Image 1 (cartoon, rainbow, N blue to C red):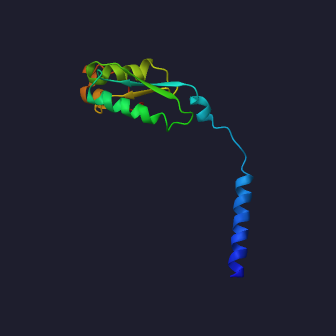
Image 2 (cartoon, one colour):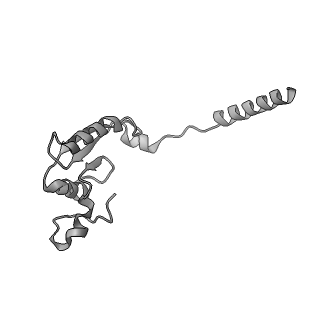
Image 3 (tube, rainbow, N blue to C red):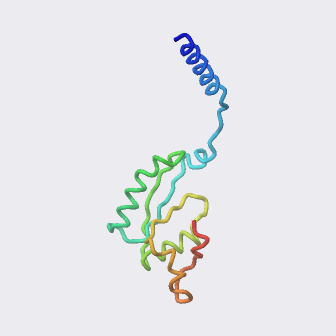
Length: 127
């Protein structure tokens, strides 16, 4: 009995010491996204299935990104999401504030159609 109470006291003291001595660090990701607005580009017109899923995802996703940025959705339809994918890959800022919600087969477009594809992106370099 006496041994377990001593062991508990030593464990509690070690835990308190390790927690209290942890240095406070700034979170660079949280600092980056704090107060920013992110945009989710949806590759279809408003009201469809992909649009609904993107809007629902954006509503809750902003709570789980450090800094809690506001996420808005914008529709950029055309070519079955090809226009949106070309925009996100080539013209949008590459700083982590743009997210693409496109048809799942779009990354394979240049691989399956070859030279006939209107894709302006390299699927191997997409993130």
